Length: 197
Image (cartoon, rainbow, N blue to C red; front, side, top):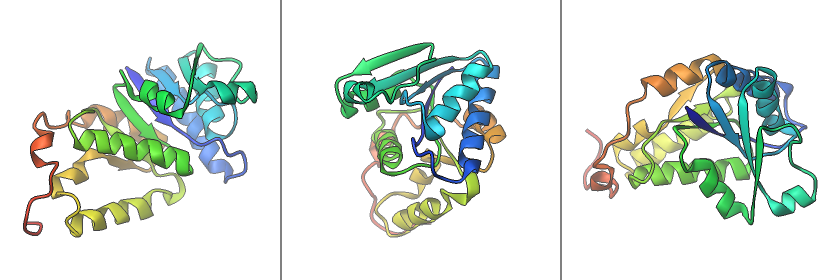
């Protein structure tokens, strides 16, 4: 299984975020998954890669050339692919992935996550999207997305496009227990009239 992980590069957040990222990387490697991520060496990005590599896993990084020029790339990866820009990086990360995991992060992580959710809504991505809710980080986002649905900007079915888990140990079981997204997703991508229920 090829798993795309969106993660942050900040080295200054609570250490619990890095600890969960490292644990997740180890669990993915022990399960035989290939980790595909943004290619960085610091923060949760570096931690998830290190966890996988320490457990003998395959880790593929996708890094824009300008970041490589700044020496932001992880030096110990199985493979580091250099791309021209951020758009190509996002495309390469998601293409061919069997699942997406979003670790807590900043605007870059959130942009990647919302692109994956948008593509799933449009029927262009059908695989599980899992948010790792370390320290309750994604709880406010989950509440906000419920409001988006409640205000009829999305349909109630769209709440099933992502899953929220509390620990790294829950990630792989959640991926395996998530059904493939609807083949007719585009038929209800447009919001229907009327309220929930």
